[in-house]
Length: 297
Image (cartoon, rainbow, N blue to C red; front, top):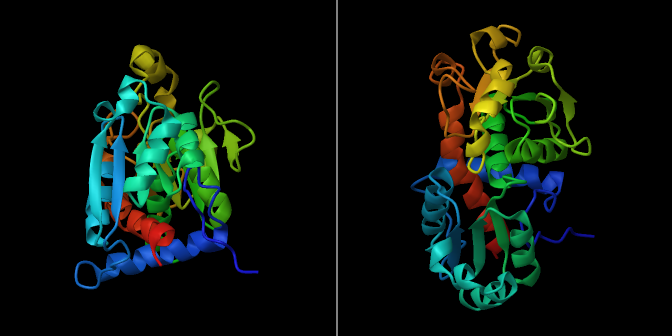
């Protein structure tokens, strides 16, 4: 029986491993063909891009991606919708489904995004919630594939706060043959149910790793506990000393924005082992492949 395409992309579980690998391959094709050999999968279609939180890479990559696929991006801030005045998420989903072909949303509530998807009749894409960042994981898989030629059998060590990015990497890795190890201190680690190896030892985590991954210690919403978080995570910085325990060919990844001197040193962030800027660019190509998959004929 042929596998039905996913309707939404909310936490990464919606797309099977085989389809995910195909999607990454397609993203690689779209990247190689840009700008001369594009796709017209969204011709005549509009996509609502809702941003309740500030965004650089996510907003720009989706806006450009929709346009390059031939569609029309409709940019909406949270305070521009009647949601800010009490209209329900359910009713918002019903109304938007009458106007657009898909909804992309960056929200402070994962529950609201799930409710939006349950009530929408068009695809809904999670562009970031506190629990998951699945579109970032797509770009990360594309970056790994381009650097190493394959995904199956790779080891990725995530070092720092076990957050939405770490959780999405664990889900995506488990589906594509990438072993994900998350090194975080007590109180910052992912739940034991995630498909990743969990440890509190960053040195042990990076041994044999093909990629070492970091993220900010203080995310949006963590400002009140910023100093405590910096103190708790101080020994989880990605620097030359930590990388000395990894392989010589190990690359360094970061989803950005970065704070050089905190979770990663400037020497590493801007050094020869950094794949960070490829990751940022690959947001565009991976998301174009995702939109094409969800909306293409």
